[in-house]
Amino acid sequence: MAIINSRLEVPNFLATDNCIAGVIEKVDVGLLKLLREARIKPKPILICSGGTSSRCTAPGHWTLDLRNEYQNIEFDLTSKQVEFEAGITMGKLLEILSKEGRTFPIGLSNLTGLGYILTGGVSPLSRSQGLAIDQIETITGVWGRGEPFEISRPDKFSNSEIKMQWRGLCGAAPFLAIVTSLKVVTSPLEPLLVWQKVLNPDQLSELIQIAENWPNSISLQWAWGDKINAYVVIKNANKEEKKTFKRSIKDLTSYSTNDLLEIPSLHNKPDFIIPLLNKAKMSRYHSEVLSLLGPIWSNQSNDVIKSLNKVMTKRPDTNCYIASQQLGGSTCQISPEKTSFVHRQAIWKPWITAAWPAGDNKKREKSLSWLREVWRTLEPYCPGVHMSQMHPHLSWHEKELNDAFKEWLPGLKSLKSRYDPQGLLPPL
Image 1 (cartoon, rainbow, N blue to C red):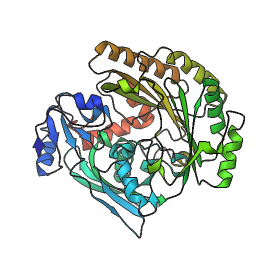
Image 2: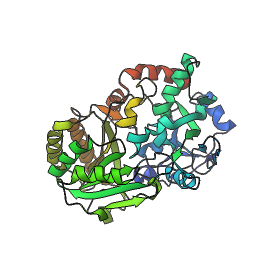
Image 3: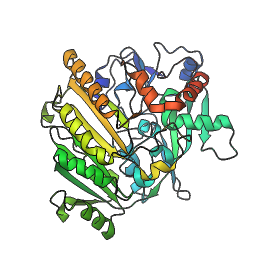
Image 4: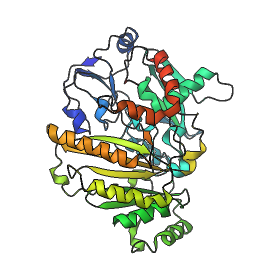
């Protein structure tokens, strides 16, 4: 069951550099026994499916690495649903689905694993297709107390406990269970258009206001490092959609038809470029990421961007940056009581990345302090948190939990007390 290995090779350098207790690779009878008898020490056990989060490892803790042993995937030709295990990355999922003429709303990275879906799953296609958790039909796994389960999407005949379990797993599963596989609905593969442009702060402010009036088939992403990069994805890439987009930005910046790149699916998307000029020096950088959620900015966009412009001049390291994705549309049509993603009216998901050279504790403290300053700057406009990454090791974990789950947090803690009573999974 266990491999005594002090390091785990993952895409996140901070996670890789942690000296861990060891690695577990299978959810077998041995692990279930440890869970039932609460003999995971030190707790919690951490989970790795894609390895992009800093909390897939922690110093002295055990990591359950699902990447090697959980690679099965099966597409149902009749239902057009796909069932896949926890070791499948989002890039591999799209690669396999594309052969069937289908797709799934993954995020901006192909490297993420099941955690991307289970914590909500914000995609450039969310405005037209909803969040990744909204596509789930069946969840299979093991509760933190060591009890296996398989749960399907509740209907009107389902009892209240099943509905509570489903709500907890869709958006907060890492606190409650080890999920080993999902069955999700897919959608037809359709061509997309991608537009990228470097903007100045005034142009970004204007584009944000323009984007808030776009149809749900168009979404804006942007990243602000040494420069500002705008990244627009257009679904249903027909002539009318092109015209809509072109008309909306004609006075904003120079436009050429060559700026629009047609791609067959998100799997083929060009990289979402974070404009950092010294990437060559990033061979060993550590980072922490905090994601926020907020409503429409409208005319407040000018104030937001002016405020961000000020804090961007204070970056303690040039690899610190701010980025954002656009929500709305289909994501707003699900009741907040159905899942643990309670911020259903959110339109913007900005995230803040604090980065520092590995081993430089002074730079680490400065970068995390900068992250908190950006958070305070954005909080009046984005009062919610998207728990796409957890930070129980940092001082503001309690605040991020409150901001992520709001009135649902007591109910979530009640679920935690029943299904992970010994706190063997990350704490709430």
